[in-house]
Amino acid sequence: MKKIVVGNWKMMGHASMAHPLVQAVAGCAGGAEVILCPPATLLAQVKTWLAGSDIGLGGQDCSGQPDGAYTGDISAAMLK
Image (cartoon, rainbow, N blue to C red; front, side, top):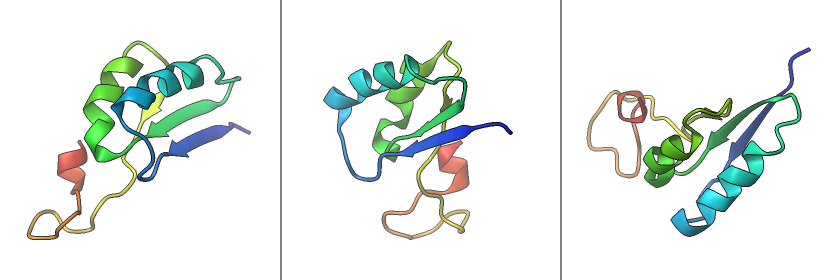
């Protein structure tokens, strides 16, 4: 059975702590598929840090609405 580990950061963290965390996770995958799900504000930066690694990147939350005035939500298209 394939092991998958997904880390959802919730509202914890900021850019200055994110890079060391990504580096630490990259060094200890242990044969499992690893996916990091940082806050939306860090997705682009974490994506650059993960380039060339086997670690996946995901969004923490996705609205069921394609667009609109939904304060605080993020659509699938925006995550993509």
